[in-house]
Length: 67
Image (cartoon, rainbow, N blue to C red; front, side, top):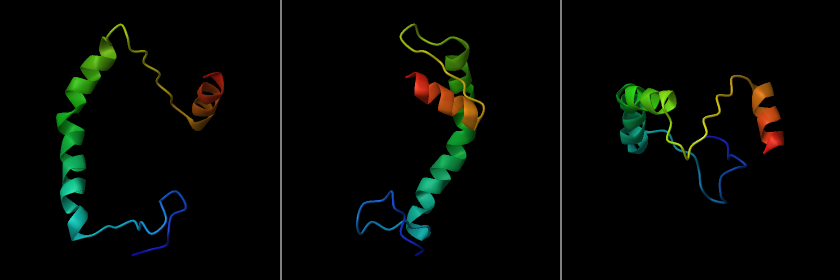
């Protein structure tokens, strides 16, 4: 099915085929249906959440070093 990925457990192969089609369909459809609720949360997040919008790999590295 392809080369083994080092981040997967021993004997666990990554698959892309008919058995994973429902998962990919869910991901594709959820992109649109979840967009509005996610944007609403980002616009007015609950008090217990802190929103961090990282726009580049450099920002990600800097943020990870700060936590």
